[in-house]
Length: 214
Image 1 (tube, rainbow, N blue to C red):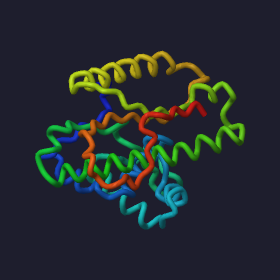
Image 2: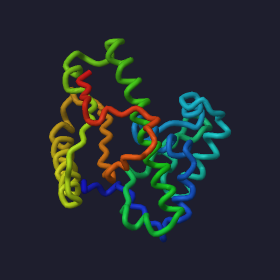
Image 3: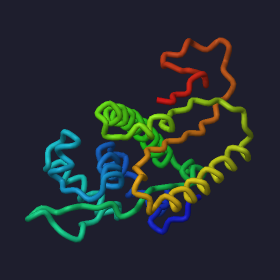
Image 4: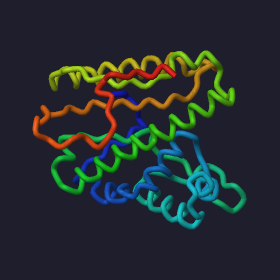
């Protein structure tokens, strides 16, 4: 796991109330925006989410109650400017299996991550088309859909290697002015063998046959 003193590790017993607060999809979005784009006011976040400033202000206060966000060092006039307290949130899947509530929260969090990937793809394509990103980003920008066969031990090792390499590369690029924010969403979701008599799938799947090199 990446070593970061600003990582929030959630525990289903200790943080039950905080987990319940995070089951609201807008709160997860607001927290993600503050982490990705930096401090903002409730009014600024209202514009970006299409919500009212009263709504975003309320949900930010709930996030602050459970130490996910805090007031930034300065205000914009009379309005608070909020910042994320932690760089990311993590948890133990095994611990989260302990109760239906914590399992449900993990499901909400994962689906929000998928929505974030879709929104990031739209933004990436628009940035490329408008020339806001240089052509040097075209080749390395990609989405992979792979279906390797791995043991639980190998999947665990893959995550550990990815975390270590990401930490190494982020530290190396920290002072490089060419570095840009990269949305990296990785998934490792084991699937049980399919029942031959199961109903046809209703969702699209490439079955590992696609790799988008943008």
